[in-house]
Image (cartoon, rainbow, N blue to C red; front, side, top):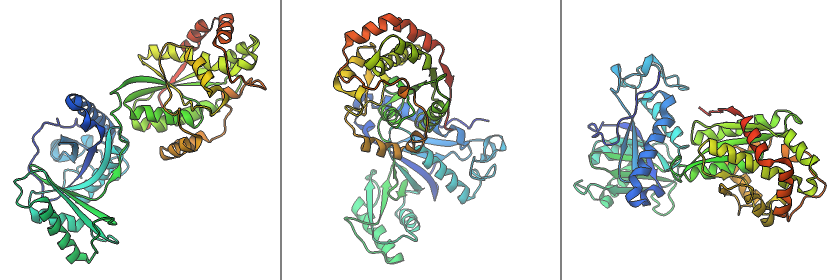
Length: 437
């Protein structure tokens, strides 16, 4: 049974609870978008709804100035519980717990929401917060509770959006800081504190929270259109896909296996990589092309030193056919300038000549160490390092051309009717849906 839809962001907030857990989502570059900002925010709201749908937690979303507030929608269904009597997946929370007075159940549910928000593009920071009444004593009590059991020094940063609040920002920070120090004896360090308590006074409530965790940043997925990623089983292409999703592209994936000349290991890797990347956008699609026979035809056509370049051009041509069928406006590759022989500037120029769609190369200026660090951070490195037989290693000549001439490559393609072959390969592609959730 699907969860209830999230409330409209313009819905007036209900009266503030005395102590309610929530998630604050801080926006990044979206706030700089001027007159188009509402389009970015609307799309981000839709992506947030999709990201939490499978959790079964009825959630309310409200837009503030540069901040989105997520709370549990108490009373959003009969009895305030979960739809269909189900609990929250993976938590052991019983049906009806969220609508009850059980604070631990609500805390666990909000923790799940915060964890899921850490994968949504367009959010700069995710903060687990407490929403309290618009009252200085309520703010002090929440801050004292949040700092219990901490180690080291602390500081308080207060921000008063509503100037009708009886204390200004500095006064509120001093009041809370004095109470925390009196309660626990922590030393104050305003420059480099071990713990920072943030207090934000809004129009109808006060939010109290500590540092939070970094979000993905960037732009909401779907804002910039669609692209098709040429997904190998290696380290580079998954990072390239991640970077393009972070710039607002929705990505589909195309993998070329060496079958029937190799086993299916590279397909398993591509599937695992796309499944891991799917957490950043949802609904990913992977297309797999058996490329071994086409490689044999290229070799028998006398490609010689141009074998690798001819293969890559054929992959791009096949990708262009697939991209147009998927209404994608660009191809994405993991090329890094000078990393391998096919990625010299001359060869990259020859690859661009193969298709009319733009080829995006977000890693073009990165070295391998930088790419591996990002792959480790997004958790694709371990999958990429699994052993397999990549199709590009098949039929590789002893010497690979580093300064390929476009005219020579076109002659090879003319002998093979490469455009027709690309159509055949695209038509024979198998589709998979490796969803993360």
